[in-house]
Image 1 (cartoon, rainbow, N blue to C red):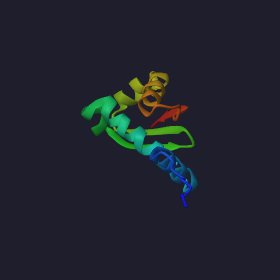
Image 2 (image 1 turned 180 degrees about the vertical axis):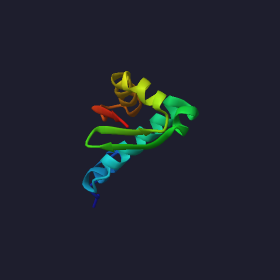
Image 3 (image 1 turned 30 degrees about the vertical axis):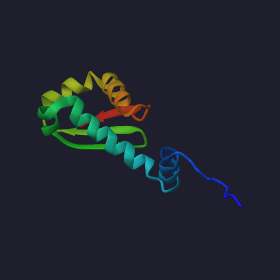
Length: 97
């Protein structure tokens, strides 16, 4: 007697587990932080005190007043490049402190 196959691609199983256990938001936060480090480079990353993603709202704490001022004019660009890095629209707004 042949067994029924419940075969599913591993990626689907992992996506389902992440959804069931509510890990998607944490994974998005990790991907955004990783993207910030890779896209902005080590000099800017060292000036970053914290990166938090709360309900699709990115909160950046920067040590340098010059960087805070510069990035305040580039919020839409920051949103665009981080969303492109993650591969889906995760960041909808940016708050720079």
